[in-house]
Image 1 (cartoon, rainbow, N blue to C red):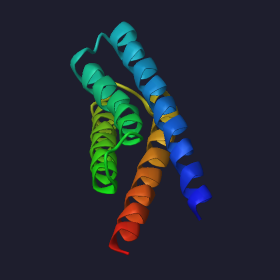
Image 2: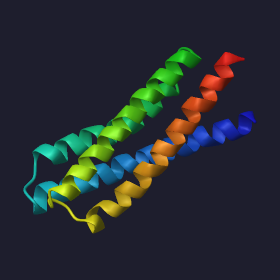
Image 3: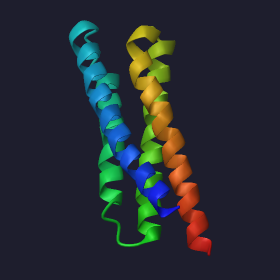
Image 4: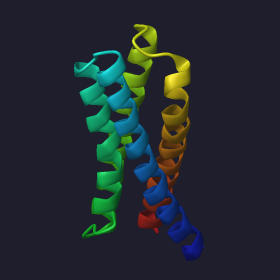
Length: 125
């Protein structure tokens, strides 16, 4: 069981980094091609902070601290989701531009939720 949890943590490290890369990529496209600077910077900030919080959680001082840091990462993921929805709703971006990041974002949200729930259950025992 412990090995599975470790594998999931390594996967979230990789997936959150991939999300940050896609966030930077999309932000650059929005700035260069659409001349959109405000939302693109918000998107880049929230998308890149997810991986930073996941990395920080690896050095958590306790299980509660670990859960807290991953919960902040999950909040940032939900914020990233908001910016993507706003880009689509306003026509600033199209679904083709957002597909890659949206897919990775959904994976991150799923994994973060699972890790947080599993860790909380382990803390109750």
